[in-house]
Length: 188
Image 1 (cartoon, rainbow, N blue to C red):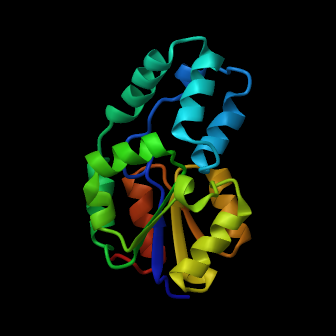
Image 2: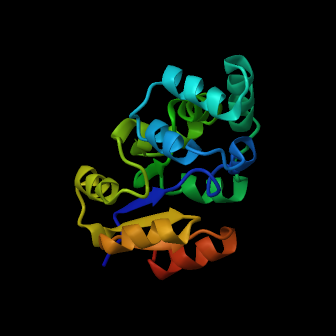
């Protein structure tokens, strides 16, 4: 089957992944709060208020730490160079939240300018762990699922996509990515 759309994860694939776990340090309730924020189900104000209470720090300190996590990142240049070659068939799908998304759009406009459409969890209402996200993406791209290749750096995420019939590539670096793209006759 011919691949007609390539869906890319952002963090850890196109952009160096943020290190958020140290901030939360297993705070009770933080996982649920982050899920709700990342799927657009709580406001920035509610997230910041609840997050600062969970961590027992001021709202200002929480915001500073949180924004710092997302601002000190850079493109994975070799992978981005491959990504640019597919701009007419690229789609982005990432677990984001409004703070993260604002930073991505400000600091990495070349991601969106080299893609057809973006599916950001905080905008579509579903995260990668939600089966509905893959159904929505397939519907919006207007391809059959087998014509979509999803590139992500997390195997359990790719398993969700495979359950919907989407082709997958586990990103562990540029060399394996090139091998996978060759298998689908996307590069020589």
